[in-house]
Image (tube, rainbow, N blue to C red):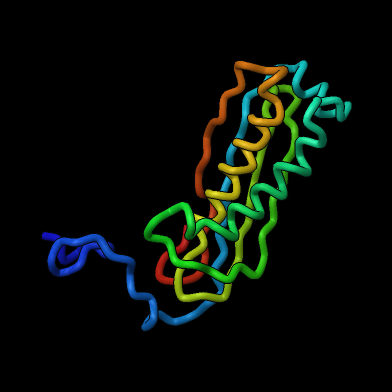
Length: 155
């Protein structure tokens, strides 16, 4: 039964997948997440008066750093030399949401989905951390993969 599981060896032990025989190709993944916040929080972010500083700049840097180090947090991820990391953060005033997207790219023999998802998650957590003093009811929501290209499967 374990022979079809890529992270289980012939003895039933966990292992990292050997990607040395896989073909390198351009890999891209796009992820999304959002944070529901109060109108007051949106106003403070727009006015750049959150006590901890520029929320979106810090969140972007945190997302980029996290994407580059995904392999250090997710045990069975490979270390990937990312060629591009893009973090976009915008406000949806009607819904009181902060929308976060990330795009990660690499020329590699394994995908970059986990890096894109880690970037979004960490950016969201950073926004939460920077705003928690003024908004105790924030909700991080809808983190998901939007797109994946390269390799055997695409989304």
